[in-house]
Length: 327
Image (cartoon, rainbow, N blue to C red; front, side, top):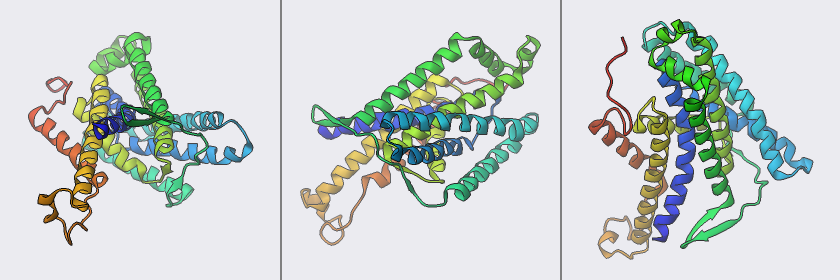
């Protein structure tokens, strides 16, 4: 039970970050039917910019929370500018092109951003300075830190704020109208180009915050971090129903839970096998228990197995609706 509760806490923490990143994918797809594979690199840029600012301000003697907030405040506008530039320069000219063209362009933009980050920050793994003292609390034998609590609270706040924006504001109404039919929305007086650009900017801002949270939680950042994180977040969006905002939230949380529970119980089985506590499993270990099966190395396997099963039995995702092609 201790392992279960601990992995649930870990899964909710990681899953909430996945959900915030997945919102960027699902918003863009819902508006213009484009899978923005460069979104993971936007998250990476947010983490890198925050790292640079936090590392520069850490010796200045400012309060640790203020340093992190300043780093986030610098990362968000940079990522918003990157998101707007991508839409304006790379995607808007191809909006009427066949779907394969913007898809290839998105992959190209991803590669460009990744190598720009390589030139600026090098290929080394960068360690986030641990300037915030983290306290640990125990709940029924499971540990949860103040950093995890902060990440959960921030992610829930971001998801709730986005839901209010989409369903309770004029911009949100314009976004939903554009998602339904951009031509009719334009005839009704909605500036479609402005709405689409705003969607990219909002998604990039969410990605920047997610990048800071990811870097703070794991303490590491690298120019390639956006590839795996982006792939997982995209999988979460597909799992919940691509283009569906509540689906992206649900998919991210479920993906994090599946990863954490799979890794936790695989790790427990490994310990039993390694130390000979399972007599029937000792023979399966090389050299009487020297073969190490690291659960963390297999967490992605469980996540994508679940994704494949969902797509096989419900291709539209958990909360997606089966709809016909847009006329």
